Image (cartoon, rainbow, N blue to C red; front, side, top):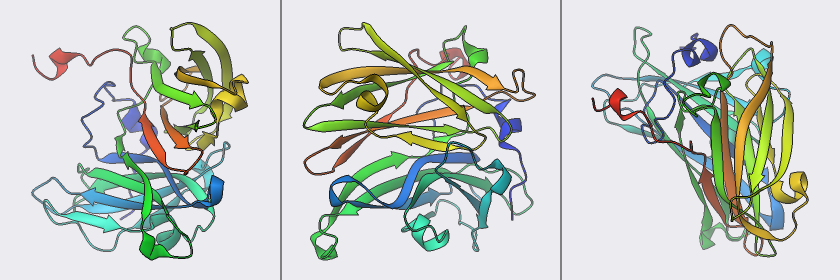
Length: 292
């Protein structure tokens, strides 16, 4: 049951700021892989999808292979064969490798929930991206990071600058002999190209650099490894903060707004062990929306 709802149309209805309200009828996993990494690692992703409803939910999954040009023209869908029963959880191991024939590939996922009659239905998604302790001996176990599903309404848009929902922050970025930090971006719009502004602050709160990601295409996933050294020339430093905003879009005044999602990961250089760094707004939600 291919979901025909446009992500762009749904984004136009969003109320940003609900960071821990993770249920949604469209949920992103912002990073997933079946691909080699640094230090002899090889990353795989498992996913869990939970149906919190009282009726069966049908699932459509879309894979966004990594690439700054985007994937709107060549969207890769699959419809899960069986519905998820009420309060049940579906486990999908090695989702990239097993269901999208994408060895050596990283990217992002979009999960769509709906009922038997096509009505949008909320789902909850969690994932884990991991690598074996020893590729030649899988019995030794593995290590990795949990990456929670991000609901479609948790995005940044320059239209919300007054409320300060136009920026996401990634805190705790390091580039040292012990750690490196990666930052990734997902364009949630299917018809808007985004230019991204990156502003870096040190641990004392002083702005120390500015950079950009240009021409992030519709439905694009793009990750910058070791972003402090790659984009800011920092080879030894800890506890940096990155402010991410949208500087411009093409078209300049789109029918539906731009929708940018951001994430980070701090990786141990010695072991390859990662820690997920979730993007956050710099202000709290509007409490009156939830608890009047």
